[in-house]
Structures are given as structure tokens and as C-alpha cells.
Length: 381
Image (tube, rainbow, N blue to C red; front, side, top):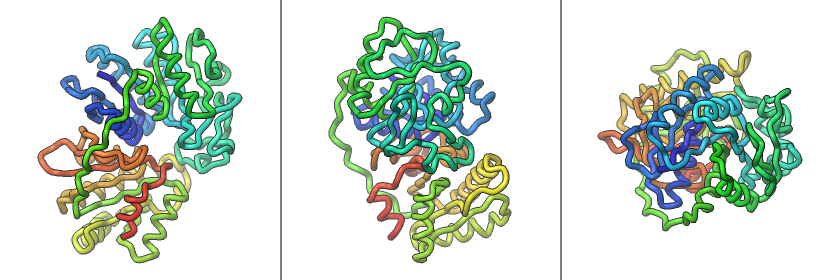
């Protein structure tokens, strides 16, 4: 069995979708399921949404539980642009497991994310000049990998493809093209001493290929249910503009703002849209003011409470959520913890069957990814 520990839910689902693509039976869970029968168990730890002290404690707890489960190998999924408590979580995993080094490959050229000469680029531009600079919780202010990881004055070791992996500590691999991922995957499999493998979705897929796994035939998709609730928890401008366009065209969009207490009125409007039009869209309104991190966390709590209230009134069949922290808050509030990926609508956009006695499908997507065409059509029509 393979185990993935992801620091947010959409990242967990994304790697679950890759496992599905390669013919593995997959379970995505918010906790370590000691009785799982899956080939791939993906744990959504949600540590990116915690303060660092709590994130380290949670990572330590999960790592100790995994020692009992004894997986064939473990992968630590982190944000592809290194948001979160990346170094602190890696270090506690190394301490508990007794490993001396971790190989961190966050870049993914398929998404325009590359590392060259110690600097991170998004579609050829320094990453701090992108929308990630306005992230309310982990704003990126430099493209230097050392700065992004907050490791100064203690450095990480930045390596080029083909370099030796003999240093102790955290080794960051540069990636400029997709073939580089394969080089790192082969090197990881050839070292004599085990190491912790860390990174984003591209490196995980390369590791599966290096283990001679092959993409399997696609499953026959289950048609989407009629009553569909779409929740957008992202602050990325392009995706917010997409929702604004739907709203301007008369679409069933309800906005929620931090601190607004009219929960019953908002829930009633969403329920009416679901019953009258078969779908409803909930989104956050505008940019957070004041303490951006505190406002983002307040919005997640409000969104989770609002959606929970709607779910108690209407038996929806499809729940679609944009944004990992938002998805985790909503599903935890709803008492949903275990999911089984059924369909990879696009890389990172995964439709999963929720565990439980009622037919509910949950689709999640990172806030920085674009919606695939099929989902955009459902949102707009």
C-alpha cells in the first residue's frame, strides 16, 4: 500500500485522482484509516490551514500512526508553490521516522511551474509577480526558493537534475521540463538509503511511472445528479471574475462576506435556487480587509456553517467545492470524512463518492486551477 499525506484536501484529492488514473483503488480520508483496503490511502491533514505549532503536532501524530500501518512507501504532498509550513512539517516527519534526508520536488512544468537557478517561475515569470502574491494566508513575496521556504539562515540544498543526493536535510530539485521529473524519480529509486519523498502532483505521477505503473482505461462516469451546490472559496482573480460573470448574467449566485450574520436569509436564498433551478452557487465577495488571514478563516467558518444548514434542508446529490481549506471546513462540518475517487474530470479536479448511506458526490478543485470545460458549462447553464 502507498500512503500520501497531503497538507490540504484538494491536494489530497488531486493525488487520489492520479492514483485512479494509474489503476489503483483509492481512499481519501481526513484521518489514518488503520483498516483500509485501498492500494492508495491519501490523508487530508489540513495542516496548511493551521498555525505552525498545531501543524507540526498533527504531522507528528500522523507519522507515528503510519509507523503502525507500515505502508510500502510514503509521499508527502505539499503545495506546488510552497505555501504552508513545508519545512517544519518535513523536519518533524524526518525526526519521527529516523530518515536523514528529504527530496522535495514541488515544480510541475505541465502547469507552467518551474525552478531554475534557485528561483521559482510561473509561466516564465517570477512567481511573486503572480496572483500568489495576494494569497491572504501565505503571500509569496520572492521567487527565491530559500525565501519561499523561510529557511534562512539555515539553507536547503538546491540540486540540478542528475546531482548526487548524499546531503542530509532537505534537498530541493530544480525542474525546467517534464523529463526532469522522471530523472528525479529514477534517482529517488536508486539511492541506497531511504529518504522522504515530498512534492506536488507531477513528481508523484513520475514516481508511479518509475515503478512501472501505466495509465489504465478510463472508468465509465456516473452522470451528475440534478440538485447541485457549487461553492467557490478562492480569492484568485480569474476564478472570481468567472463567478461574477455568471452572477451578472442572472445566474443563481449567492455571495457571503466576512462578519455578515444573516445566515438564515442566505440559506433560504440558496435553498430556493436549488429547488427552482436545480443548482446554486455560493461565493465569497470581494477581498478580505484588515487582517487577511483572520478574515479568510472567518469566511471558511461561515461558509461551512451556511452549507451545513443548506444540507440539512435539501438532499443535494452533487457538492462541488473550489479551494482546499474551504472544502475541508465544509466537509468536516457536515460530518463527511472518507471519500472514494470515481472520476478525474481534469488534473486536480476530482469527483469522489462520499462514504455514507446516501448518494452524494463531492468534487473538489484547487482555487488556483481553472475549471474544465464540462464544469464551466454546468456552472454557466
